[in-house]
Length: 286
Image (cartoon, rainbow, N blue to C red; front, side, top):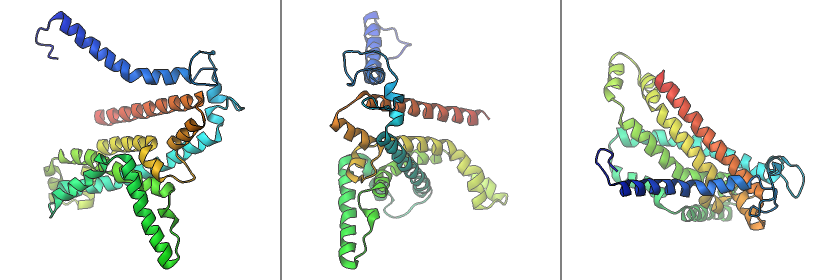
Protein backbone atom coordinates (compact mmCIF):
# COMPACT_ATOMS: atom_id res chain seq x y z
CA UNK A 1 0.00 0.00 0.00
CA UNK A 2 1.37 3.42 -1.02
CA UNK A 3 1.29 5.73 1.99
CA UNK A 4 1.59 8.83 -0.23
CA UNK A 5 -1.83 8.14 -1.79
CA UNK A 6 -4.93 8.83 0.27
CA UNK A 7 -6.79 5.62 1.09
CA UNK A 8 -10.29 5.19 2.48
CA UNK A 9 -10.39 4.59 6.23
CA UNK A 10 -12.05 1.20 5.84
CA UNK A 11 -9.33 0.04 3.45
CA UNK A 12 -6.58 1.14 5.83
CA UNK A 13 -8.22 -0.67 8.74
CA UNK A 14 -8.64 -3.82 6.67
CA UNK A 15 -5.02 -3.67 5.53
CA UNK A 16 -3.70 -3.29 9.08
CA UNK A 17 -5.97 -6.07 10.30
CA UNK A 18 -4.64 -8.34 7.55
CA UNK A 19 -1.03 -7.59 8.54
CA UNK A 20 -1.83 -8.23 12.21
CA UNK A 21 -3.56 -11.53 11.44
CA UNK A 22 -0.66 -12.59 9.26
CA UNK A 23 1.85 -12.11 12.07
CA UNK A 24 -0.50 -13.78 14.57
CA UNK A 25 -0.73 -16.74 12.21
CA UNK A 26 3.07 -16.97 12.15
CA UNK A 27 3.64 -16.45 15.85
CA UNK A 28 0.72 -18.35 17.41
CA UNK A 29 2.10 -21.90 16.89
CA UNK A 30 5.47 -20.84 18.31
CA UNK A 31 3.78 -19.23 21.30
CA UNK A 32 1.75 -22.37 22.00
CA UNK A 33 4.89 -24.53 21.84
CA UNK A 34 6.70 -22.16 24.20
CA UNK A 35 3.86 -22.05 26.74
CA UNK A 36 3.40 -25.83 26.97
CA UNK A 37 7.13 -26.28 27.56
CA UNK A 38 6.36 -25.07 31.10
CA UNK A 39 3.22 -27.13 31.65
CA UNK A 40 3.40 -29.49 34.65
CA UNK A 41 1.18 -32.00 32.84
CA UNK A 42 2.63 -35.17 31.34
CA UNK A 43 0.97 -34.27 28.06
CA UNK A 44 1.53 -31.13 25.94
CA UNK A 45 -2.10 -30.12 25.97
CA UNK A 46 -4.80 -28.55 28.08
CA UNK A 47 -5.78 -28.41 30.87
CA UNK A 48 -2.99 -26.33 32.36
CA UNK A 49 -1.50 -28.15 35.38
CA UNK A 50 0.76 -25.38 36.65
CA UNK A 51 4.14 -23.85 35.88
CA UNK A 52 7.28 -26.03 36.02
CA UNK A 53 10.85 -26.16 34.78
CA UNK A 54 11.00 -29.94 35.06
CA UNK A 55 10.95 -30.41 31.29
CA UNK A 56 14.28 -28.58 31.17
CA UNK A 57 16.13 -29.55 34.34
CA UNK A 58 14.48 -32.53 36.04
CA UNK A 59 16.67 -35.66 36.14
CA UNK A 60 14.08 -38.35 36.96
CA UNK A 61 11.27 -40.07 35.12
CA UNK A 62 8.53 -39.51 34.12
CA UNK A 63 9.45 -35.82 33.77
CA UNK A 64 12.96 -36.30 32.41
CA UNK A 65 14.17 -32.86 31.38
CA UNK A 66 15.86 -31.76 28.19
CA UNK A 67 19.31 -31.39 29.74
CA UNK A 68 19.18 -34.85 31.32
CA UNK A 69 17.69 -36.83 28.43
CA UNK A 70 20.55 -38.82 26.85
CA UNK A 71 18.68 -39.45 23.57
CA UNK A 72 17.91 -35.75 23.09
CA UNK A 73 21.46 -34.72 24.00
CA UNK A 74 22.93 -37.28 21.58
CA UNK A 75 20.59 -35.99 18.88
CA UNK A 76 21.73 -32.40 19.48
CA UNK A 77 25.39 -33.44 19.37
CA UNK A 78 24.85 -35.41 16.16
CA UNK A 79 23.01 -32.51 14.55
CA UNK A 80 25.83 -30.13 15.50
CA UNK A 81 28.41 -32.42 13.88
CA UNK A 82 26.33 -32.80 10.72
CA UNK A 83 25.56 -29.07 10.52
CA UNK A 84 29.19 -28.02 11.00
CA UNK A 85 30.48 -30.46 8.38
CA UNK A 86 27.73 -29.57 5.92
CA UNK A 87 28.29 -25.84 6.42
CA UNK A 88 32.04 -26.13 5.89
CA UNK A 89 31.66 -28.17 2.70
CA UNK A 90 28.91 -25.89 1.40
CA UNK A 91 30.95 -22.73 1.96
CA UNK A 92 34.06 -24.13 0.30
CA UNK A 93 32.22 -25.52 -2.71
CA UNK A 94 29.77 -22.59 -2.84
CA UNK A 95 32.59 -20.04 -2.97
CA UNK A 96 34.54 -21.84 -5.67
CA UNK A 97 31.39 -22.52 -7.70
CA UNK A 98 30.39 -18.87 -7.45
CA UNK A 99 33.75 -17.89 -8.95
CA UNK A 100 33.29 -20.49 -11.66
CA UNK A 101 29.90 -19.20 -12.80
CA UNK A 102 30.57 -15.48 -12.29
CA UNK A 103 34.11 -15.16 -13.63
CA UNK A 104 34.45 -17.75 -16.40
CA UNK A 105 32.72 -18.62 -19.66
CA UNK A 106 32.71 -22.20 -20.87
CA UNK A 107 30.61 -24.58 -22.90
CA UNK A 108 27.31 -25.73 -21.43
CA UNK A 109 27.55 -23.10 -18.68
CA UNK A 110 23.80 -22.43 -18.72
CA UNK A 111 22.95 -26.12 -18.64
CA UNK A 112 25.28 -26.72 -15.70
CA UNK A 113 23.81 -23.74 -13.87
CA UNK A 114 20.31 -25.18 -14.26
CA UNK A 115 21.63 -28.54 -13.10
CA UNK A 116 23.08 -26.87 -10.02
CA UNK A 117 19.64 -25.43 -9.20
CA UNK A 118 17.87 -28.77 -9.60
CA UNK A 119 18.29 -29.94 -5.96
CA UNK A 120 16.36 -26.86 -4.79
CA UNK A 121 13.21 -27.81 -6.71
CA UNK A 122 13.34 -31.55 -6.02
CA UNK A 123 11.34 -32.56 -2.91
CA UNK A 124 13.58 -33.51 -0.01
CA UNK A 125 12.11 -37.00 0.28
CA UNK A 126 12.76 -37.70 -3.41
CA UNK A 127 16.27 -36.32 -3.11
CA UNK A 128 16.97 -38.49 -0.07
CA UNK A 129 15.61 -41.63 -1.70
CA UNK A 130 17.60 -40.98 -4.88
CA UNK A 131 20.84 -40.54 -2.96
CA UNK A 132 20.14 -43.64 -0.89
CA UNK A 133 19.40 -45.81 -3.93
CA UNK A 134 22.45 -44.50 -5.81
CA UNK A 135 24.87 -44.95 -2.92
CA UNK A 136 23.47 -48.37 -1.98
CA UNK A 137 23.81 -49.56 -5.57
CA UNK A 138 27.46 -48.55 -5.62
CA UNK A 139 28.10 -50.14 -2.21
CA UNK A 140 26.35 -53.37 -3.18
CA UNK A 141 28.17 -53.60 -6.51
CA UNK A 142 31.52 -52.95 -4.87
CA UNK A 143 30.82 -55.52 -2.16
CA UNK A 144 29.78 -58.20 -4.63
CA UNK A 145 32.63 -57.63 -7.09
CA UNK A 146 35.55 -57.03 -4.72
CA UNK A 147 34.32 -58.05 -1.28
CA UNK A 148 35.05 -54.55 0.05
CA UNK A 149 32.33 -53.13 2.28
CA UNK A 150 32.23 -49.34 1.97
CA UNK A 151 30.25 -48.33 5.05
CA UNK A 152 30.36 -44.63 4.12
CA UNK A 153 27.81 -45.35 1.37
CA UNK A 154 25.42 -47.00 3.80
CA UNK A 155 22.85 -45.00 5.81
CA UNK A 156 24.74 -43.01 8.44
CA UNK A 157 26.32 -39.65 9.21
CA UNK A 158 28.47 -39.52 6.08
CA UNK A 159 25.48 -40.06 3.83
CA UNK A 160 23.41 -37.54 5.81
CA UNK A 161 26.14 -34.92 5.36
CA UNK A 162 26.43 -35.63 1.64
CA UNK A 163 22.67 -35.58 1.22
CA UNK A 164 22.27 -32.20 2.91
CA UNK A 165 25.34 -30.84 1.15
CA UNK A 166 23.78 -31.68 -2.23
CA UNK A 167 21.24 -28.85 -1.93
CA UNK A 168 22.68 -26.55 0.74
CA UNK A 169 25.79 -25.94 -1.40
CA UNK A 170 23.48 -24.52 -4.07
CA UNK A 171 22.07 -22.00 -1.60
CA UNK A 172 25.58 -20.93 -0.57
CA UNK A 173 26.57 -20.59 -4.23
CA UNK A 174 23.62 -18.32 -5.00
CA UNK A 175 24.23 -16.05 -1.99
CA UNK A 176 27.99 -15.74 -2.51
CA UNK A 177 27.61 -15.42 -6.30
CA UNK A 178 25.16 -12.51 -5.89
CA UNK A 179 27.70 -10.69 -3.72
CA UNK A 180 30.59 -11.47 -6.07
CA UNK A 181 28.61 -10.01 -8.98
CA UNK A 182 28.63 -6.60 -7.23
CA UNK A 183 32.42 -6.45 -6.83
CA UNK A 184 34.08 -3.76 -8.94
CA UNK A 185 36.65 -5.68 -10.98
CA UNK A 186 38.72 -2.52 -11.39
CA UNK A 187 39.82 -2.83 -7.75
CA UNK A 188 41.36 -6.23 -8.45
CA UNK A 189 42.90 -5.01 -11.71
CA UNK A 190 44.43 -2.01 -9.96
CA UNK A 191 45.98 -4.24 -7.31
CA UNK A 192 47.39 -6.54 -10.00
CA UNK A 193 48.85 -3.56 -11.88
CA UNK A 194 50.54 -2.41 -8.68
CA UNK A 195 52.35 -5.73 -8.42
CA UNK A 196 50.11 -7.77 -6.13
CA UNK A 197 49.92 -11.49 -6.83
CA UNK A 198 46.55 -13.09 -7.65
CA UNK A 199 46.61 -14.82 -4.25
CA UNK A 200 47.21 -11.47 -2.50
CA UNK A 201 44.36 -9.86 -4.43
CA UNK A 202 42.06 -12.71 -3.46
CA UNK A 203 43.05 -12.51 0.20
CA UNK A 204 43.06 -8.72 0.64
CA UNK A 205 40.29 -7.55 -1.72
CA UNK A 206 37.97 -10.28 -2.96
CA UNK A 207 37.45 -12.36 0.17
CA UNK A 208 36.98 -9.34 2.49
CA UNK A 209 34.33 -8.08 0.08
CA UNK A 210 32.65 -11.51 0.12
CA UNK A 211 32.87 -11.89 3.90
CA UNK A 212 29.29 -10.71 4.66
CA UNK A 213 27.87 -13.15 2.10
CA UNK A 214 30.08 -15.97 3.36
CA UNK A 215 29.03 -15.38 6.97
CA UNK A 216 25.38 -15.03 6.04
CA UNK A 217 25.32 -18.13 3.86
CA UNK A 218 27.20 -20.00 6.60
CA UNK A 219 24.53 -19.16 9.18
CA UNK A 220 21.74 -20.07 6.76
CA UNK A 221 23.48 -23.32 5.81
CA UNK A 222 23.96 -24.26 9.46
CA UNK A 223 20.33 -23.62 10.37
CA UNK A 224 18.95 -25.43 7.31
CA UNK A 225 21.17 -28.42 8.01
CA UNK A 226 20.34 -28.51 11.72
CA UNK A 227 16.58 -28.48 11.14
CA UNK A 228 16.44 -30.62 8.01
CA UNK A 229 14.11 -33.60 8.31
CA UNK A 230 12.89 -34.99 4.98
CA UNK A 231 16.25 -35.69 3.35
CA UNK A 232 17.83 -36.73 6.65
CA UNK A 233 15.04 -39.22 7.37
CA UNK A 234 15.94 -41.22 4.26
CA UNK A 235 19.69 -41.30 4.96
CA UNK A 236 20.11 -41.57 8.72
CA UNK A 237 21.54 -44.61 10.47
CA UNK A 238 21.89 -45.55 14.12
CA UNK A 239 23.19 -42.10 15.13
CA UNK A 240 20.05 -40.06 14.55
CA UNK A 241 20.16 -36.25 14.40
CA UNK A 242 17.83 -34.23 16.60
CA UNK A 243 14.97 -33.93 14.09
CA UNK A 244 14.82 -37.71 13.65
CA UNK A 245 15.10 -38.23 17.42
CA UNK A 246 12.15 -35.90 17.98
CA UNK A 247 10.16 -37.69 15.26
CA UNK A 248 10.80 -41.05 16.90
CA UNK A 249 9.80 -39.63 20.29
CA UNK A 250 6.57 -38.29 18.80
CA UNK A 251 5.66 -41.76 17.56
CA UNK A 252 6.27 -43.17 21.04
CA UNK A 253 4.08 -40.53 22.63
CA UNK A 254 4.69 -36.82 22.87
CA UNK A 255 5.60 -35.12 26.14
CA UNK A 256 6.32 -31.45 26.90
CA UNK A 257 10.06 -32.20 26.70
CA UNK A 258 9.67 -31.84 22.91
CA UNK A 259 8.20 -28.40 23.51
CA UNK A 260 11.21 -27.63 25.69
CA UNK A 261 13.55 -28.74 22.89
CA UNK A 262 11.65 -26.59 20.40
CA UNK A 263 11.84 -23.55 22.69
CA UNK A 264 15.55 -24.12 23.22
CA UNK A 265 16.10 -24.27 19.46
CA UNK A 266 14.05 -21.11 18.91
CA UNK A 267 16.22 -19.20 21.38
CA UNK A 268 19.43 -20.66 19.97
CA UNK A 269 18.46 -19.81 16.37
CA UNK A 270 17.38 -16.31 17.33
CA UNK A 271 20.58 -15.72 19.29
CA UNK A 272 22.68 -16.93 16.37
CA UNK A 273 20.83 -14.57 14.04
CA UNK A 274 21.28 -11.61 16.41
CA UNK A 275 25.00 -12.30 16.82
CA UNK A 276 25.39 -12.49 13.04
CA UNK A 277 23.58 -9.17 12.53
CA UNK A 278 25.66 -7.53 15.26
CA UNK A 279 28.92 -8.76 13.74
CA UNK A 280 27.88 -7.60 10.27
CA UNK A 281 26.96 -4.12 11.56
CA UNK A 282 30.18 -3.82 13.53
CA UNK A 283 32.30 -4.69 10.50
CA UNK A 284 30.33 -2.42 8.17
CA UNK A 285 30.74 0.54 10.53
CA UNK A 286 34.46 -0.12 11.10
